[in-house]
Image 1: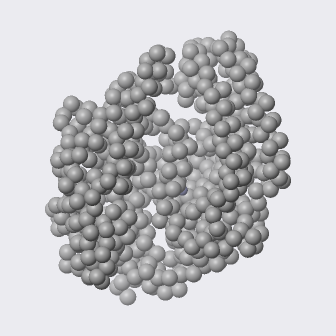
Image 2 (image 1 turned 180 degrees about the horizontal axis):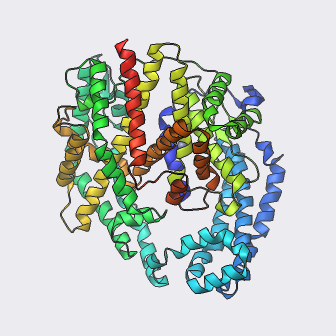
Image 3 (image 1 turned 135 degrees about the horizontal axis):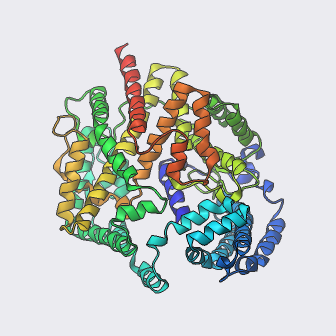
Length: 622
Ligand SMILES: [Zn+2]
């Protein structure tokens, strides 16, 4: 689950950058722009041999099955086997996945990836006895084991993480019954997907250009930025009113999803669905409550931005349908790969040479696959599971600014993985998803500031600053408004109050009006926006979106500290990167000097947003 979710997060971040023209073949690309997967295996034959070795080791995992609680030795031996076999399997999977991603149409590579994946399933099945047996070991026995075998302490966080869920683990029969409901658990999500992606009737509009547009989700997102204001207005109105026609149906469906979350949570001895969702990563609900409260306190900063945007667009009144229009004129900037590398290295200087040396290594030693080629996977990602080797980055470089910022983002993931792998034993090297976007976002912040300082013109400066503010509106404030809505509708069910589409529309409309300052005359939110909740698939993800906001907040807070305190703050920040999965995510962040339960990270993030607006105003005054 964790792996799927983290992939999802990365995909969502980059879905916008996936439109590329794939023209060249792989052979036409200079070797220095292709990743060096030979670092993992010199040939497929080596891979095959390793695969057989891993397969032959499966019985090691189950050697002490049913006897883990008998002795500290049994437990330690089993843990060592599980993790050493998994380490080999990660390497194996990485090789075949990289091969597959560089040419998705190649059936030989596809077959290798499938073999690695089914071996992974076999390993998980073999180890499935582990958690139930750990839960059966009492705390006092476990303490005795730690005293007997000091090496077990290196696995303590893993064992604690299983044992802390004891209160939420039922008897074997009960767990089986609950698990059987997994069959219907995705129903609402599936119904929503099928309905909104295919069967839902869609409106067609004619734009001022004479172009006819069918308002599907993609038709809408392509045209919500239309330069002609009447077009935008028309597109928004028709699109959301169309959702309004299905308010009751989509509402009943989402209510079903919310009820399901609650039923599962209650049966697992949680008070609320929020508590159950956050407990997966041992995150207290106060983190979520604090996020909502602090962002509500920060609304004046959002309102300042909206007012600035209105002025820059030259409007008397800002409407909700103006939000996606860029507040500044787009500037086309071109970057070769070498330009991008140079800019990134310079921008990362404040993080010190320990950091930039490794980034340089990633450039020089071919950790990165740059160019789009025929059949290559679109988008961008960074891997980090090649413990004894190095991470890889997949790019689809198109010589624009987005390519540079995507590369520095992915290098953040790479550096997090690299430093974690260097400083942690394998078993605690994989970092939790809650901290996964901090390093990537911090790198982007550094790039942003570097680009502004070195911009060739005021126009270029305004473009970078303005894009940054638009990003904060969409990724921070909008996502928290979603998080607030998600929480409110769950609270209705948990308080045994009625919930349906109409109630959802009212809740949603109240939140959006408050966020965008409708009553203060900041933004006019037309009534049909109350149906917008019906357009957001994320409400079927079970408390997921808030993590977009927390990542940005913490990353920005660390960045502000680094700007103020220099190397000391850098070393504090590195505690997260080097800490890997050695602790729970909130503890990792706290140890690095930011308290997610306090107002501080929010104040620092808002300080930065206000600084950016000051800079824009200074330029405009000229
Ligand atoms: Zn990312």
